[in-house]
Image (tube, rainbow over all chains, first blue to last red; front, side, top):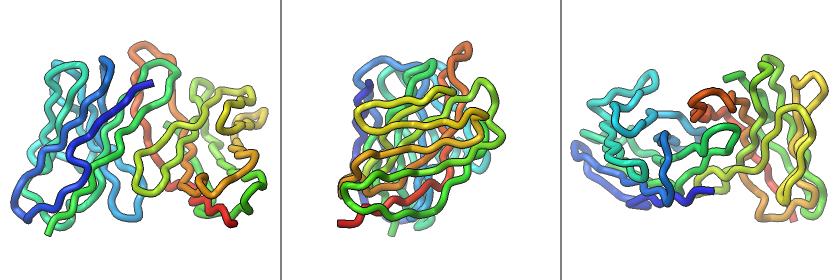
Length: 114
Length: 114
């Protein structure tokens, strides 16, 4: 299993500012995934972060709004840029153990934009 | 990944078995059935997965029909702590470089009643 730590666990931010969310894993993993969960909704994948290359974004998400870093095999960051109230969500980091294994999730970062 | 269909909500009396159905009629031969749950304000938690045989672990049992077009997650003795949203997901696993993203549907909100 993998233990994932996310920081911060929650934050309240002013519109127009940016927030960087950190994700630390206790073991080396190839792929890390970032999800968004809007209030009352299911999880939506933002992007896949592979160490040593640019992240792959899902439809509707762009690098300028959600830049991602993946400097090594145990760490990644997601930045929510130029925030608006519509960005208020829970942001979750996830890793997959690989072949025929389950995915593990962090506890999420609850972001409120005012 | 194949699409899944789940009832939006279910109730279950505490101490009784909770049977959560999932339809995945377009599942492919190399896709596994995974179940996760998300307790309020937490990240999703892996429960169980299977390919075609029934599976059981300390948390639950997974029954997959012979044609693999549907499955049922069984919590044998539901407790109040099992109140959560349960997600049924089908995804490819075991392929070369198979670090697969998880695509979430809307899930079933299970309410365990005292």
